[in-house]
Length: 269
Ligand code: MG
Ligand code: MG
Image (cartoon, rainbow, N blue to C red):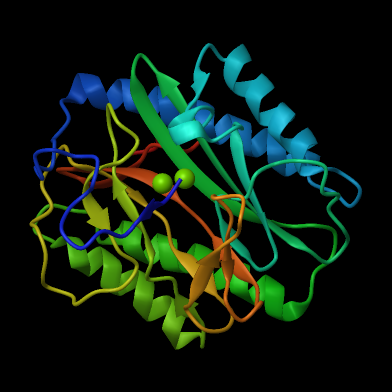
């Protein structure tokens, strides 16, 4: 789940301090991330023309609960579901429901799990059946922009090296990055400091240090960057109605570089 950009620091953090996690804490966060990834894998298998977003939500919740974790989003500031499901021009925070997915649509699925009080947070955009070449390109570029950001997650880099890497990939492809919502630090709260914008000046921002954990989440629009919120109080859509894609991983900074926590299976060094 992304957070609204705020002018100073995270509105829900009293300290403004970036909390480093111990190796033991990272192992718990790895489990939360693993279960989050399992849920997204299950959703990936369930996405097809004719499925409703509520059905995808049920698949994710079942996977998380069976794995012994709790859905992170359900009840978060009143959010009613396990997933955010955002279709086509919806950017983030769409609420699962009766909407039936149609051939050619894209659906951004954001998911989080809690294990022993620690959070995992991850998102992927899926094609529903066969999509247009432009929709596919938008998804591919957004995923590549996330990978570029992750590659900067090492000690010695600055936070906005991550931001700039994301922005560069998205804009080089002719797309735009959303400004009004950002990634975030994550740990015992879903949204910790720092904010992780998808735009910024390389070589600036807080120094990245071992033990920091960032949820990096490019929201990339095919048209302009501007967004607005719907009357449901959650769903964010593009102002121009063009499509948007969203990919996210929870990433720890280690001495050896980035450790992506939100993947299934065993760790690869
Ligand atoms: Mg998320
Ligand atoms: Mg997030």
